[in-house]
Image 1 (cartoon, rainbow, N blue to C red):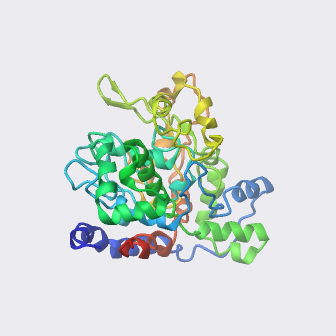
Image 2 (image 1 turned 90 degrees about the horizontal axis):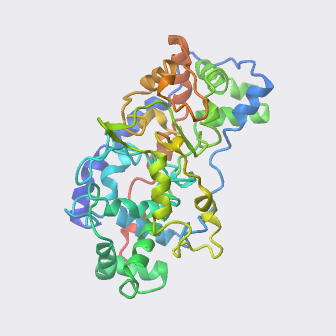
Image 3 (image 1 turned 30 degrees about the horizontal axis):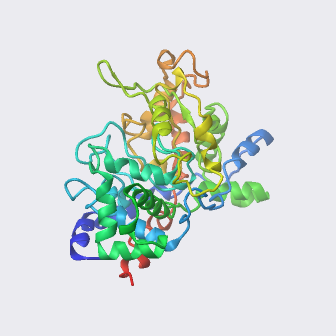
Length: 412
């Protein structure tokens, strides 16, 4: 790593110790609150088991021929930390997706060259998404990695700058040749940009969290080990029972990722200013259809374009206004603030929102899933205890934070 890059990373790496303390505290079981296994019904057990095992199989992305390639991940990591991919030479992907913040930034809305309208979600476990961005405006991780580069508020560059950097920087050019088997100076701007996105995606695919206290409980429940299951805090068990029962949370936050990977209207206002609307999923569908890098285009490496089926058939409907991607809940206790616009500062506020939900804010023509939960203080406490057990121990969050050996070594 050169001295300039080391100086840029120093503030991020310095806060790793603080994050370790925070995660360790979040992962510590409640004292004196374990030792009894609740009498879960068969239906509750089945609902609980549906949230695992973790992690799911790490299947390469068929649209990205370098998915799972360690050399591509090393190139992608170099690009992820490189401020030269911005108009001012200082904004990099890491600026809004910093390792100490679980590859987010803990701001209400992110700031690149200027402030944007949306909160930066964590990139940990991003490889398991189906659509990318709060509005699903990209249909692959690699296409989504290209999008911020040309946004005038984020990186603010023309894609020609990506191609030029890959062709003229000796280390990046060498890595590109090794990964893609061709000279970066000999490909088109569009191809070089698609390849850069694929390398960035290969790096982000490595950011997978390790199993949590919930996963240990789920595994014990699955194998019928009551003694091990009883070590899961009782307040977390009560919160889990509410999560799959009264709260109906698992209707949307389902599966190993705790997300159905689709979109929903949750009653959060989507006006950016009086008379100015962020269209949410509606705008995302329009954008993904128009994207030159979508799965229907020539840069999809799958010969039959199979991953493009969803893009071909996605249906644009009026109800998509105000819909946002259902986020996964793993490590949710560490990724405040919440919602697409960062409008809720704490998990307690999120639960308060769903407890006192204003149904008039929901689309009348949308699915009627949400109802005010009318939670009591004890119920909120139990749900918070459960959500806290979705936090990975520190190694699962930090093992990928420092540059990998391949990314540190000079290219030969």
